[in-house]
Length: 421
Image 1 (cartoon, rainbow, N blue to C red):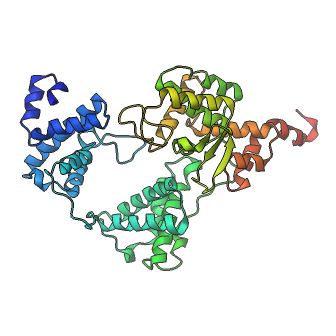
Image 2 (tube, rainbow, N blue to C red; image 1 turned 90 degrees about the vertical axis):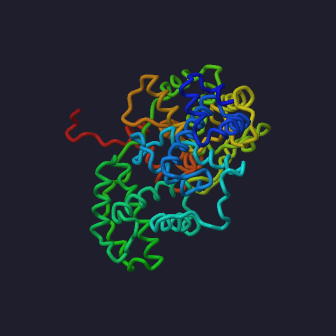
Image 3 (tube, rainbow, N blue to C red; image 1 turned 120 degrees about the vertical axis):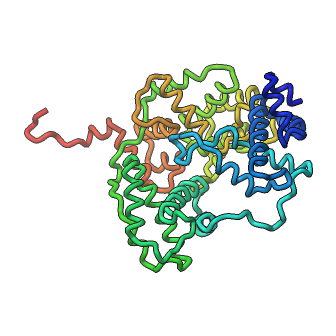
């Protein structure tokens, strides 16, 4: 079966001589059964063959494969630079190795992991696991916010304790202020509080555990941020329609993009709310859509406009892959998994905005959410109504859109002194 995926004789010979060669046909057959595309199967077979070479060079056999061995292999593979990921992106040689190990474990080639044995991890990793549990159970922090905070907490601990052995008595206030200053100066003004919040949660957790003395929170330097100092990124109504006009195709991608874009532009949903939408959340009879609790831990029921309903129906019936998954939006390639992150709507919105020739300092899916809120305010909607639609927990967040209601602001503007124009 492997020969059907590789044409060159040299590649076939190399694949047939490796330590995992006897099991490549089984791996390929299982990947086909799970619905993987041809290119995805080729990549995983190549990754399995490279992993086998690494095992041989390290004097290991297939019976020595454990989760820690797989992690050690992945950690040793060079990563590609990525502006979105400071640690870089995994190359194809390292992707899917855990999946390959699971398939070999099903065949009895790889021994099962001992039950109840935790995966080996350093002290920093163990601290971060406890921190994540603390944020989820004690603070009620949303999953996306936890990931953001954990990223800064991990970077801070790795920078302060390079040997992965934290000695809390050696942690001083200047470590905190130096890290926050270095991170904040590289960020946009609206994002400079992110490293502060991440380290702040970590310090609060360590004080709660008794690892740091009470009052250590004062070591966190304040970052000046004037309320409503910036304008929400938004575009005009005609520009929104111009972007929507670009999603008129009948391909699965075009139908999915149009459905996601209309949810962003008409309902003002967050990109995470779009990706978490499930089939049962749409009530076709009453014309409502249920937005599950997310960032603000509040569910809300919203009416479904006609054009949004039509786009969702066309995608669900004509373009959505047949799958047992209940999430509405799935990936475009087999095995048609749910969208795990907000990358799909964010990249889609960015690409369409650039294709429409709309210049902006920062692109993204939130442009359409801000544009929908701006139009509601300009049409006379109250802050409470806008907050209910957007799912804001505080009216202070919604008040920022008042700066974009230029006709109303012009009516209350004071005349220039001396009647000079």
